[in-house]
Amino acid sequence: MDKFKEDQLVMCGRVVDYVTENADSIAASEIAAEQAAEVTKIYTKISGARGGTAKRTKKLTEAAETAHTTLLDLLPALLGPLGRVATRLGDDDLRAAVTLSGKQLRKLRPLAFIGVVGAVLGSAARADVAPELAKQGLSAAALKPLVKAHENFRTAQPATRKTIDERVLSGAALEDLLGELMDELRELDEDMKAFKLIDRPIYDGYVQMRKIIDSGGGKGKGEVTPGA
Image (tube, rainbow, N blue to C red; front, side, top):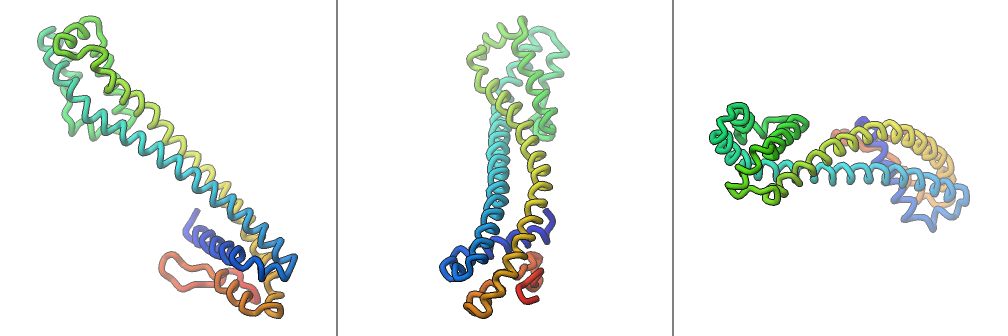
């Protein structure tokens, strides 16, 4: 959502807090109370959807970052010995494939990094290489933490991207829902006008909550305020 819509949503949150805190007073108008409940329901739906996708993305991103850090830490423990094996076998292609610096690895984009690590692990599993690595203490069991970190990163990285894409798609749906929320809020504006006669302080407080504050530092402005 753009900044103005974000500001609208923040304003809606203030209104919902206000009508919830003053529910007993607003109950003086049955219609206003019902409309306030409808506004609260839609706002809660939007807030919950935004929070849920953000938390899922954060969790998956953290998992990918943890796996990436683990791979960068453990991979040199295999690359060095593989270089020695390549020398003993006289395998120039293997030597070239495993001559990678930490700087080179950190510069790789995620999918390229996954491919490079997969190729290194594939080389380590070769029938002629595995026995040589075992002589250096790197059995298949010893390599399990590295294999596991690769699997974790390979799983988490696409999942993170997918969740971000889902958030982009859901953003459009949330904008539609925000439009519905604003329509309901404008109905509540009309219902709250009765409080000019019923309970003026409640009405004045509602008008203040209803102002949209410019998050860019501008002054508050009433997008659609009761009585306007």
